[in-house]
Length: 440
Image (spheres, one colour):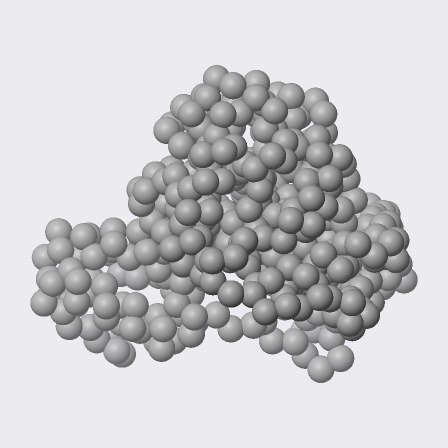
């Protein structure tokens, strides 16, 4: 702040100045800002004006303030220039990105060759009837009501539209902690207040969800299986406990993010059975390929009508070319076999790492999904030490809110068993105490 002084004549100018410096990289993610009083002196504004500006920056998701901690630039502020990928040393194994294994994704060329691609014009149906029927069959097989459906450009697009159609800036949303970093970013960018709910290997803790709803959370976003980053998955008993909590707050909006769907490696235990306001989104990205930006959104009639109506005001529909491609893939029995093989392979690879870590006395979490969550004492030190040994892991900080312990995330989708043993051994070596020696 001293090297690049800010001058502003009011709260709006201070907001723009800080955003400009974040976008240009002068202020970096995680950087602590001066106190309100000190910043006011440096900028030449009253503490009240500075506090107003910081409140607006918090609403936009540019800065975060946690209890008893200073205000700092968010780890992933919604300003595109600040998002830089983690450096990957030459020859290192990058296990940080959460991607599926490319070898377990279907070849799109035969599916494209089978696609019927007539010209689609304005005013025609927004979704292919055949695709919706296949989606209904999949959802009903998992116990979900599927009368009302909508197609969106991926799971996060669906969640953004559902929350936008039901909430206002300043509303509280109960979220998993640890939880999906992109969801945190999305909520902050729209001015929602994140209310963290602790999770264990079986998902959200019912008493903590009850506390969040009593504090005034109007919505809850939950991952029923393959939770990112911990791999938590609801079982029948936990789902029943969470449904009982939601029944005490009937106006709560429930959003289920079933982003992994058939490759989660765990059955779906949905919470929507007795919920008045709900939505469930299922993406095709992990099973068919991340570039296929399509998700199926199911929900109560009012929620789907609101989402579809707002979609009509914007893009209108998801590309019919993309819909035809997904329909072609879903209609191919060989693709279904590949998806099942991918699901089984992901289970084996995830469990291989968990077993290897356990043999070295290391605790970790990964009941389902593509990731393993490993608690650590120091994230930065662990990341750096393992990078020196050729492993690039994701730091846990973006996935954590207040109350969650430090950890690192390992994407296991491409991690074969002998690599899992090597990574576990080297993680244990990083923990080993250094022998002190005396020198003259």
